[in-house]
Length: 405
Image 1 (cartoon, rainbow, N blue to C red):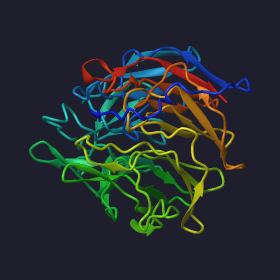
Image 2 (cartoon, rainbow, N blue to C red):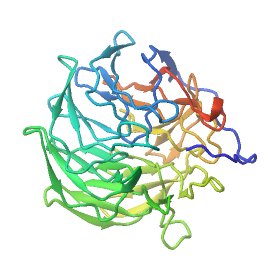
Image 3 (cartoon, rainbow, N blue to C red):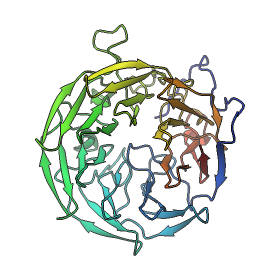
């Protein structure tokens, strides 16, 4: 969201990098067929079982248009090709790969969010064999900016997000439901303890799901959360666990909106980045966070981890085949003017972040996915954000990069 009074004291770190010491790094590959932004937790490109990558839906540079377009990336040729479009254009939706290789697109909104959000209950299925979408059962609750995660048994848990509150506002919800690919239907499950949107989730080794932080709307402001909870798919229930940020000198911890989280090879979970949330009148805008925390399911506790070298919001976080974690791009929420042209790697063995690695172009609000061969693909997003863009709009890009570890 654009900030109208950017602080002059915000350091420009969008192009900051350090010399590479290995052969690994970023290189350009084929461009997307169209410029697009993906800023939802699960709306970016996904990896298909045949090694290709599917991108579908998303928004324009003002958030005024939602798209139905879809495209497939072939790592062999390094090119994108247009495929069948979604039946309904959508943004802030979720894309989830099912056990049979098909892809579930669920929820999101259709239209302009400031006039007619039309938050969706509808869902549809992409068949990679035919390149077409077909309808499937609709969710019980309309939602966008939610989280969807594939459970160990192949079902899909969808939780939280924003739902419609007439006439044009949205209401952050706690409702959760499960999609069964075998029947194509949704079943309501217990709601989360705390309503939330824009939050991360991670599948734990025992099949449970950890959710953390996020936001609620209060009086038009985005209030960041510290609360964390765990879903047990066998019991169908949620239970609270330790809040994030309790190791900082705040009684209730430090809240985070838009943080990213990834499960590590040892069963712990790394959470980092985002911002604290705050008033939306832009008289105050919170700065991005670089602090990291690590959750241990065995103890139910969070502990401090090394902070990223660059505080990041609207970025992506992925676990590499080596077990290390790659943080990519993003922006400074307090400036909102340029996408970062760098990335960094966390090593769980040392607990440290490595030197900065330069992207070919800075970006935020983009999609990222790990390929079958271990490389990482990033696509689209905004290179220039609203505060520095023409007429106060983002400058979206078609550029696609590949990272070789």
